[in-house]
Structures are given as structure tokens and as C-alpha cells.
Amino acid sequence: MRERRSAPAKADGAPRSGSVQSVERALSLLEALGEDEEGTRLTDLALRTGLSPSTVHRLLTTLEQRRFVQFDPSDGMWHMGRQAFAVGAAFVRQRNFVAPALPFLRRLRDQTRETANLGVADDGEMVCLTQVESREIMRAITRVGGRAPMASSGMGKAILSTYSEADVAAVVARHGLPRLTPRSLTVAAGLAAELALIRRRGYAVDDEEFVTGLRCVAAVVHDAQGEALCAISVSGLATRLTAERAAALGPLLRDTARELTRALGGRQPDQDAV
Image 1: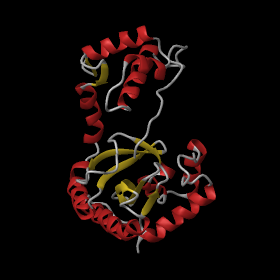
Image 2 (image 1 turned 60 degrees about the vertical axis):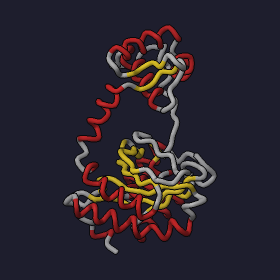
Image 3 (image 1 turned 45 degrees about the vertical axis):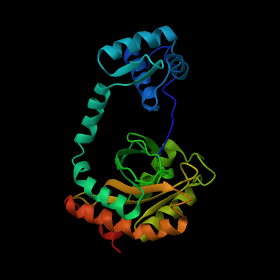
Image 4 (image 1 turned 135 degrees about the vertical axis):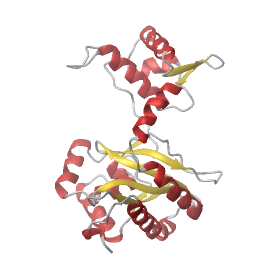
């Protein structure tokens, strides 16, 4: 999953009802910085957030003092700081299934030679919590912490397939079905048919629907109530992870997800049994 989203606009305007303007502005800068691993210039941050350069500089200086951002004088770029990582890592730590899942992800990486990922659904989007990178020189780029629409990602569609029709409709009503690539699902009926297929075979495929040139195979991990806890996937370049290879890897992802479900004390819902 790879994405670039503009940070919230109207930062120089009136604050939203019930919000604190300075906090909104500082968070918009952190969100913008989080999108670029290579760092961002102050002027670019000002353009992307709608803030004046002087306001951006003042906020960055404050954040730097608290180690949430850091400045590299050699190239004039601002980066996320270690305190931002420490705070963000707390989100992962409270998901007590991440550490136990890592051996399964490493095994998937070794079996498929592709990048293995673990993600959770959050407000109609998938968030990548952790990954084990492929050892291939050319590999899929999946940013930990990156977000993708559920209907456009393998892990997202896998989890959507466990939802009721009403819950799927609610996600679509709120987030729509944007055309991110020529292969994106943009019609509700098409998504419904895809989810029915996923339920029958036990795995999902992102067929270049989020990023052109990248393909992903995913399956759901269930909790003790038989509900979707998270999803695991392998992702790779479409030239290597062909449609035929994705279909061949599907059962591997399905079986690994079920094995992880059992390891975490979860259970397969009856309707997903094959």
C-alpha cells in the first residue's frame, strides 16, 4: 500500500468547531511530513498545508524542541523525529497480535520471496501496521503506517468480505469507490461480486487496483468471536507476481491466515469454512 494524501487544508482559516487551531496546524504538519520518507522542505510544507511559511517555521521549531521533527541542515529538509515514532509505536504495541504474527510474515516472505504485510481496518481504510520486506532488489513499496481505501486493497477487500451487506454499503457511502487506477472497482455491484468471490475462495487479490504495477494477495485473521481482527498479505511487482501466480499463492495466504487465527486464539466463522 502506498499513498499520498494532502494534509488538511484551511489551516490558516478559522478552526473547526471544538478544535484548537494551533494543535490542528501542528498535526497537519506531522501528517504532511509522514508522507515523505525523504523529508520535506519548509516551503513545500507551507504549500501542502495552506499555512504561511512563518507559521510553519514557528510550529516546526516547537515540534523540534519536543523531538517530534528534526531538521537536516545539509539539505534543508525536515523529517519526522524519534518522539513521533515513540508515540506512534504505542498504537502498534496495543495491538498484541503484531509480535506473534511476525514469524508467520517472515515465513510468507521466505516462501513467496515477496514483501509480507499485516494491516487493520480503520475508518474505512486499511492501515499497514508492520511488514517483512522482500529480499528482491525490485520489490513492492509498502509504507508502514500507510493507508489505502478498503475497496482498493487486497487486505481491505479481504476484511470487507466479512462484513454484512449493510456495513459494506456504509463504507461505500462514506468513502465512495474512487478510480485510483484503470483496474479500480468503481461500481458497487462489481465490489459485491468481488466480495462474494473472496468469501468462496478464502482470499482476496488486489489486481493493480490501488497502484498500477503492484499486485497483492491477502487473507483475513479472525479473533475469538470469529470477526475480522486483521489481514495479512504478500505484495509484489505485477511483472513478477502475475495474475496466475497470485491465484496459486491464494491458498497459501488463506491457510497461513487460518493458522495465525488459531495461534492467536481466534476461530474461523462457520460461513467461511471451506
